[in-house]
Amino acid sequence: MNDVSTVALSPETVMRQMKQNGVTDIVWLPDSETNWLYLLMKADPDLRLVGVTREGHACSITAGLYAGGRKPMILIQNTGMLESGDSIRGWLMGLNVPVVLMVGYRGYTRHGVNTDTAATYTERFLMAFNIPFYLIENDSDSDRITKAFELAERIRQPVVVLVGDEYHGFNR
Amino acid sequence: MMHTAEVLKVFAEHRGDAIVISGRGGRHWMQISDTALDLPLGDPAMGGHSGFGLGLALAQPNKRVVLFDSEGDILMSLGQLPTIAEQAPANFYHFLLDNEVYATTGGQPVPGAKQVDYAGIARASGYPRAHSFTEPEDFSRELPGILAAPGPVFVALKVLPEVENTPIGQRVRWRKRTTDKVVGDLRSALGVA
Image 1 (cartoon, one colour):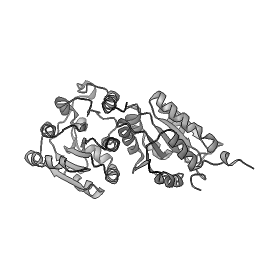
Image 2 (cartoon, rainbow over the protein chains, first blue to last red; image 1 turned 60 degrees about the vertical axis):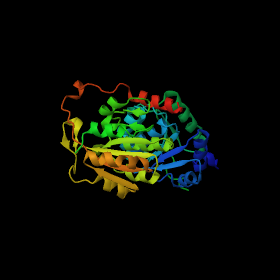
Image 3 (cartoon, rainbow over the protein chains, first blue to last red; image 1 turned 135 degrees about the vertical axis):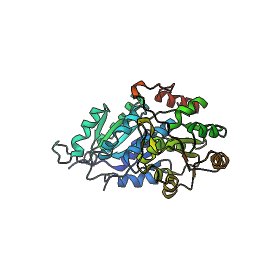
Image 4 (cartoon, chains in turn yellow, green; image 1 turned 90 degrees about the vertical axis):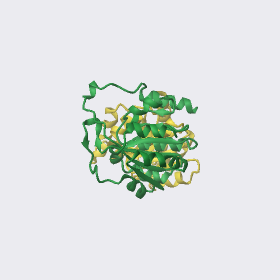
């Protein structure tokens, strides 16, 4: 029998990590992995949600929030991250914004054989941009979210957490 | 049509202690003010100035945040307008310098250069107030009232294009600070560094 912490990533765990790391604002565009997380975030009076209509917009909004002293986090899917390349370059990397992007890893399969090009290019994109990233698949991986925050602060650059838990956990 | 320098000069008289994101008016605004509350960001990535302004306004609700955006940027990120309207920062003043062209690339017209009603788009996106001006006298007369009322407000200004044809590598750099230094200076001034 599997320990539940090793088979699913619970939204409560992600929220706990956000709170532990002092996140004040979530700049996000919903994807199929985050609907339950949305309910939790919305219920938290200390967390501001800024919904965007295109993922690249999240980068400039985040840069503005950071410039004004807030601690934002970006929550998007890998498809949107691919679309956001120039905004990541210019507004996050160019302005030395130490932000964590939690990115839904659409198409991810642990065995590496996928049929979704969104997954095919995700890690290659990050490597091309020289953006450090961590992969989390279940609750037992969640301390990597804190490691991502710590790294972002240390290098004053964006760091990505890939969420490889597409089909359960967040969705319930 | 107005001159961008003229628009900024009029605004400067009413600026107060606002944070100013000078956007495409940066070269002219530098001649007026270049303090830690002035953000000559250049062009980090086209289309993002409005988002940056929104984020800054949300982060600093007790400071007025003024942005001089461009129509090329707006067209690239029309979807930012509903987000700004939804967040509705009362301290955000969103000015648009509409010269109808991509001036830094030689003056090619933007799509719909003569047809797009930017104030109408802002209003339809949920901005509670939006204005359009083509004449400096009208702008000068109405500006104090616009700045005295709460935001978010959108102000579309028709300005004359100042087309640059010099190859980019040969252009004289007008910014004195790097973009990350501009942000660092602001954070220090706000006490959030």
